[in-house]
Image (cartoon, rainbow, N blue to C red; front, side, top):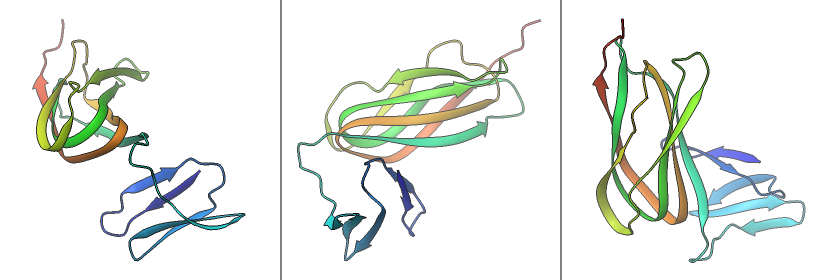
Length: 150
């Protein structure tokens, strides 16, 4: 697996094919080096990709809260879901929620509504995508405060 990032925003990418040894971009064209030579990295228009964005563990507040939903501005073809990981019980528990299935050729907005049962202060998130293209312009997690049980 090769890991790389761009110098504009330091976004990390992982390439999981078996033969890539290194990557470089020249004139906006992505090139990969293998044992067999140098190749232009291209994708067919109908090829589906799997991609994800991991957000590190975040401390939501000094009080017990729960994430209620994620509001997103996006364009996509394919499926998009969000996995929330909580550690309130002392072990990682993961819950996955689907974005409503729709084709969005241009920027639109939508909401991933989280289910009941999430609790605590520390949450991490993974946005996962399978399809031909995706563009996430913005994502905002909405929290609600919960009370302690006595």
